[in-house]
Image (cartoon, rainbow, N blue to C red; front, side, top):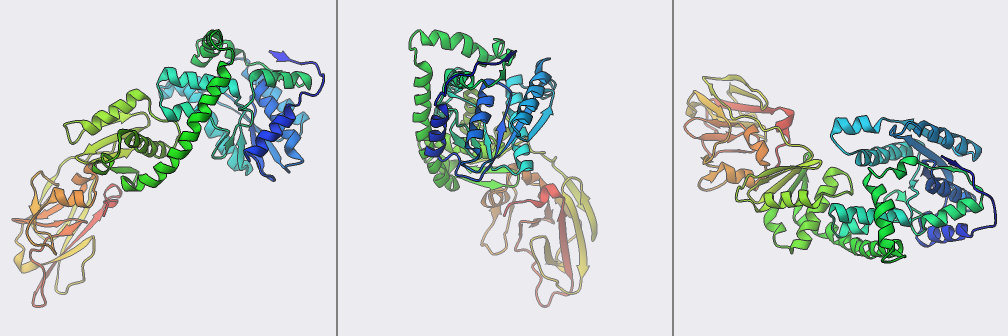
Length: 471
């Protein structure tokens, strides 16, 4: 539906908009700004207001429109945005995708899928256009709806902070303004916009909040949107403090590993539960590459993994996998590939290929060539064939070089912070005892000496999945 509103006097919203931008330093001057334009009143007003700042702030504006393919009329919205940007001489990037089809394939909701795809689209277009800033048209009523949506879905303090005026490269200059103020601005300036009729469809949660819940709440407090906006500002200030604390404390309990994170649960338990939850959420946020956290239900599943009597508990969460190994928590985007146990008998020197693990080459030489992580040498006359090449078993012990006495192989893995899903990728070379935990540590047995006549040299070449063994 298309609205052409009458032109009348000056609303003064430009002045308020300018003050918000200046006070919060949303723009400093000379930026390239990508404006998300749906064609609705909010985004059209945002583009119009930014045009008023283009000259004094030396801005270069671009617009982006993503047709979600949810409504039959959506192509008409795209055409309206194209004509609007052409008349305002704003370069436009317009694309179409089929959100319902993608949501069905991914087994996700349409609203959630559309939000994620729109965000990815805007980031990509901003990169292509060289835009440092992405401007979104969310306003105070949107903020109220977001807070209520999160409360109903289940949220914590971070969720109640809701949307910010600035988060990274995204800015929301209209956030202090109401939907009514925006419509008045458009009417007074005779600016045309389109109405997305799907906003009236109460099958969507946000629309039910907008058209059913908020009108009911206004009966209790006519300024409910304003009050919810203040609540968000209160929690946003708290979140800014806690974000700095998270950055300070996180290195003491967690460290990045190949493909994910390792969390030391013993250190994590030293903190109060409120701090523990924030640190875990921060790790998950970085792992999942989204500021959107887990739901309370999913967070409860994670906490059950941490407190489980099973030291090897695991759980699939939204966008990640969690696996506990005694006092270590491993977090990855997807469940790792766990190799099966193996055991091979080697009758003499030669080459052994271990599927999914790597290749072991055993040679006899007359002169030592030196050792490193992937190469070790033994006195050949003291090593009796056949050798056994196998994966780790519970209870394995060996005599580590440079140490007195024996040590459990498992303890070596823990000391080296080797993820438990990697442990069966480590070949153990044995005669009657373990000679080498390949790639990690040799034993003190049968070390070659100056008088050693022959050298038995072992070289392990891991497959890529095994090459990232932590040290």
